[in-house]
Length: 447
Image (tube, rainbow, N blue to C red; front, side, top):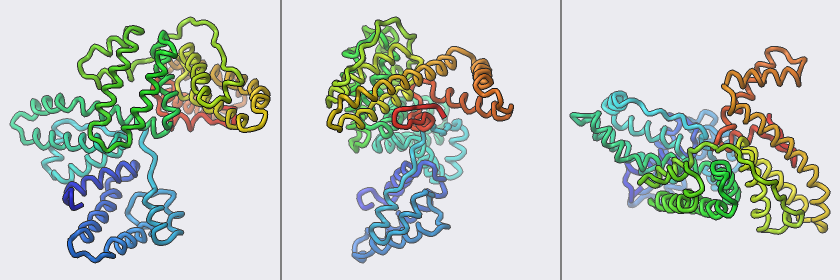
């Protein structure tokens, strides 16, 4: 509070709490921020009572436990409020809502922006800060703060300019790199938050396998390792230039390694802006599945050999991905998880090889059925128009469920079509789609 000053502290409090409670309303965040700023104002001045913060924060945590509290809601509040003192405060402080996988922020027109800004500049800034932070809250904090400051500066400058349209055009061009960095780092770090470092390697491996099936495992595996390292280093970093610097260097590595392997990658790498080049590659759609020789499966021994697991099994799944580019990552991730489950069950027992040998045939059969179904569903979604796809779904449900009522058939078709339109695409949201594909030990199925 003392180093930032009240206004910057307040803005940062809006950003932090909007990131933390991504589904909260502006009014709920405002009430919470008002309390936090008031606490800092009272307790951070010279000569304040040494117990000021303790007393104030205890009062705030007690108020949070009131069922009519105007703060962001969370199902974990009731459990936290069974505790007392510091334990309660730490419990409440640890609560957060899952990040938004579907950003809903729609930028208003220049005229609408300036109308809202001129009506009440402070209210405009607060509301924008809340909305933007809620939607892009997984971007590293320095990136998010920089992007918000840049945007508010643009609005403040252009809304008093004699030529606002020209001003907005110029300013948007100048902040284009920062805008791309915010969008990309939010997507990247959202996936990293769900997957963690090891599965992020697998995610990048799968992505490139399907975009560039002509590239080998040896070409892509080091890039997957480097990508996961960048995400791990920068998603939680407070260094202002971490993500831009590391992502730019990663883009150079990818372009150096893969431009000769694929014309589309080569085209993406021709731009002068490295972040635009990365966005271009990230946005590429999967290629058509090529004809390749039969896949070499990892041995039972390899599945229980530490780091060999990543290279042997990930190579196997990489080979599946490049041969069946219709199957999105969310399905292949479930195969990865199912194999990990097998490894966890078997590789800690005395006769691990015998355990793997006895359970693996069942797993192999279930994976084959699961991937066949995924390939069929997503293949039809990608090849047919949406209306044709829904008609095909209806015909399929009628065959498998002849006694279903028209209403239940319609519901089934709509649910499956909604799933396909969200999850049968490249870079599908991992949390949402993962919850829609349920797994019990080895067996996976669509809800």
